[in-house]
Image 1 (tube, helix red, strand yellow):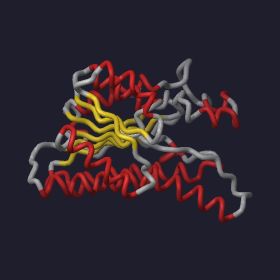
Image 2 (cartoon, rainbow, N blue to C red):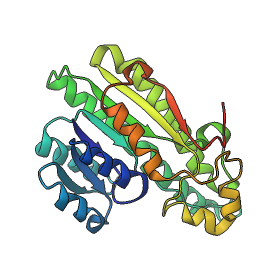
Image 3 (cartoon, rainbow, N blue to C red):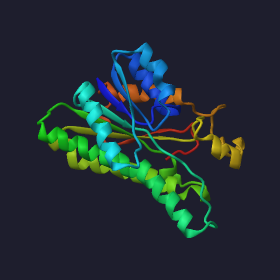
Image 4 (cartoon, rainbow, N blue to C red):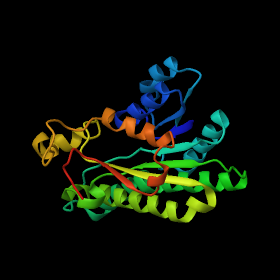
Length: 249
């Protein structure tokens, strides 16, 4: 399979890319700036990997990411919308700063995945590509249970990701052979999560988990690989929880 993974330079995206490459898939690994972090994977899987840098808050660079993906491996069989940010913004800061942080989070976490899906589906139609196109949106348990007060924008963006998945399924499943899924992790032990731990403590991060350890990126990557393989297609539109039992619904 040919797969695009956004936010591949660290955490969940890195482990997903590694898992897919080791399973013999062709992978376009997107990162914002940290290309160096992916050079080891690219060297090990030279014929099956490709690195593209792009700022997902920039429309021009989103278009360049799409073009680079297609130019390298032709139309992808799947895209993994994993790239995201979580920036603390308490409501007692100035409205102008809060608004700026909110927009930045929505643009990267929700608008960019929407644009990627929109463009790839349009290209699929224009080129009359009949094969299945799987979309995996990395959401969060925050979409269902909410989040801490300083991460309102993050929770809103992830709720939007769930709605995006469902809407893509209803709108393009039968007509365009688009097969979307959401994965909703709980707290995952990544570099991005460290800012939350620094502010709220590891006890808050692990609160409610019924296992003896925090979820790690390597716990999510095999699930993505399984979905990419096509063995879960009849779960189309659904959300799969990976949160250590910290939120059961």
